[in-house]
Image 1 (spheres, rainbow, N blue to C red):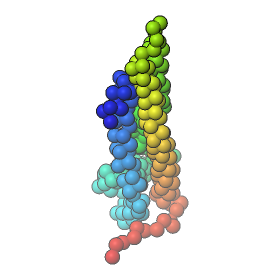
Image 2 (tube, rainbow, N blue to C red):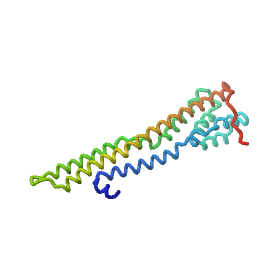
Image 3 (cartoon, helix red, strand yellow):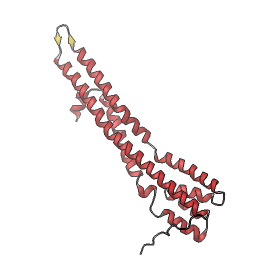
Length: 210
């Protein structure tokens, strides 16, 4: 590996740094963007059951807000449950925008790495080509400089693509997951609004574990 880095020359170092950052972001997002952490199953049912039994309490709102991103959205709605339907939905939308922003954290950086990695590899290719042309002399071609220039050009191009391809795949994967989470949170928040304002009574109670 060290021999490859030496052959690729100094332009490989920015690519190595970008690859380390990309791997760290991918691992972090894989851990954080789990369905059971973002939109836990049965959370709305549990919240509705407590609401119908005890009403809206500060303890319920605090507990929901600390549970998950979905809980934060539901808590924002319950905090304004005594207001009009419009105000309740507005508070849910505000909380949803904040939650969405948090879910998309680091995705811009990952997308940027996916976009610029081929350009960084191309820069290394240009540096290698400059070395190749620099090896041309009136007395002939310097084989060592020529070989090094070719190595710099090819290794940087290849490494740039190696970084860009998985970074792009994971960037699109995470964007899709965030969008699906946002849609699911919107649907569950709409059900909560209907229930609180007496327009929906068919939501099942949470299952009890035997």
